[in-house]
Image (cartoon, rainbow, N blue to C red):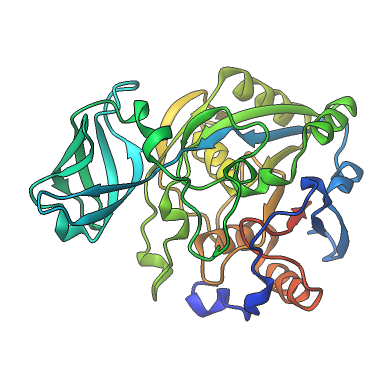
Length: 337
C-alpha cells in the first residue's frame, strides 16, 4: 500500500471532537484484534480487560508548552511565532526552530517583550526559521505564550485538558493524544493488576500535522527529540526476553521505542528521530498499541496501518464513522492487540 489515496476516508466534519469527554476514561474504545480481524466497542476504562499481568505499558511524559507567541517587527507589524524545538544547550533557551506567519515580516528582528527580542539567523529547507533570542525563552513562556491547538479544533479548550495527567517534561507543541484518556485512578487500577508503567519522552513537533503530498516515498518527517530512561530500557528488555507484551500508548511511543531499538535491544539515552513507519515496517519493540483516530492521508494513519494491517485499519475507520466515534486529538481511542 504505497499510494496516498490508499489512506483516504470520508469523515463527516461533525465527528471531529472539539472537546474532550469527562471523565477522561469515559471516551469510547474500539478494540482491533489482529489475529482474527474482530472489532469490539467498549469504553476506555475497560482497557483493563485487555491488559495482562506482566505487560509493560509505556507512556510519553512530554508536556505541551505555550509555544504560540506573538511579536512585532521594527515597523510594528504583528508576526505569529510557533516554537518548534530548542536548539541551544539545555536550559539556555536562546536558539529555537520556529514557524513564522507571515515569515517575510520578520526581517529586521522581532520584539516579544521589553526584555525579549529575536533575530532570524537561518532559514531551513522547509521554510522553518532559526531564531536567536536575546534572553531565555523559558522564563517568558508562561507570561507570553498560548497553548497551540491543532487547526481542526475551533473551540476554546482548557490547556490542562490538552495535557496528559502524567505530563512531566516540557517541550511538545502538540499533545501525545493517546494518553489523554488516562486518569490517575485508571493508572492505579492498571498498576494494581501487575502491569508495569514506564515512561519515555518524545517532544511532539508541528510536523505531526504535516500532510503527506502525492508520493509517500518523498515525504520527510520533521526531526523530533526523544529520551529513553535506563529504567524503561531495562523494563522493555526484560519483557521482550521473557515473552511479555510491550504496550505503547500512542504513535510517539512507537516511534521512540522503534527508533531506540538497536542491536536487538532498547538503548537508553537521548536522540532524534525522523522515523516514518508505514506498511512493510518490521516492529521489534512494540506488541500492542493504544492510539486515537487520525487524519486521512496522514503519517499517523500509515503507522497504524503498518501495525494492524491496511485492510483491517481502513475497515475499522469505516466502522468508526458508521458508529459515530469521535475523531482526532480530543476524540475516542483504539486498542490494537
